[in-house]
Length: 488
Image (tube, rainbow, N blue to C red; front, side, top):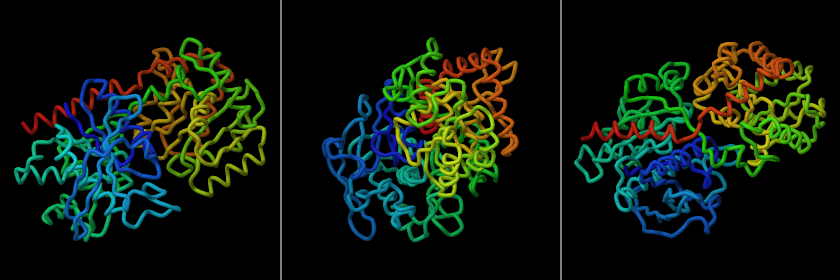
């Protein structure tokens, strides 16, 4: 098939979260399965050096903002792959320090920026790459399915293209004043309660959900959760209305990046055969790097995360001092809510031999925390899919998680029978509660210290689990084939 992946982020061009990893990982796996893929994203000039943009292959233009707007189209490739990339370049919209926001504030013209991007992506499909499927992602591309459906209803030349729309996080709607409908290129009749209208505003996430041929999200459990008011953010009836055309597919992991056997960032590369030696070396190196005593007996609990309530920082900070009574060390990497940054830095000050904190983000350090920690903290209050728990499993670092979203689908709790049958891959607590979180940490600490044989079995279970994109790409291929069958 010919597939156009339309996304606002992709590695290595621009990244704020998991969307970038998914867009790139899935595209590479689809190409490996002998599909032809073009990935389309904005040309964020301050994030993508001119030397990485490739060559201009042409230009698209259309009426918007009461004038004719144009974009240059660059073509390049994802490094070390056969995935073609089209970068949509309009400096007025995309030559900025941030991708969506700056100094904590959303750009005031985000509606125009991403409506323009979506329209330019569709024109790129018209002029430079005619796909069988356009796969759009999140609110930033929610207009795309509507534009294709309008073509279909008017028997336009793009009307035979199928559309798949993936929700990566229901919390972000892309909601703007109704006047922005004038910039969509759509007939005003699509601004109605079943499609793009939401309490008088334009809602791009709702439009994508309602007008795509099929809708997916990033884990089976999250697909079920988002049909409920607790997780649907007001759009649960729209999702429930999609019925069998809405499914969840768990994200995969790009094993060319996250693989302890080939990871250039870690002190010693290892696999499931020599993981004891490898993890011991990586743990000692992490302790040295972070200024902690080099103590092989201490259990290192790692965290790489945005420091927010969603990621369970309220549970961690409530119980941290109790956990530190045990032979435990914390290594934290992240940034976010200033309140949590201050609490973690205060913990580091009070427990300098037990707590190490890096405020910010550093890609190499993230890899070293995954490899050098004994267990990984990820007690999220909600988590559409999550990738770090899967990275942790690959690196032999059992995750401690709350049973929600993709964490439910990717982590099997340690019980006697799950250890014995080889399915256990981490520690799970069922209700979002600080005491239950603490109990689960104690389960992990107790096994690590007192039941080494069981711990080693758990580590092996995690490391041999298949989390790669190869299998997941086939599930998306099945979705694309369903869409094509519906149109034929």
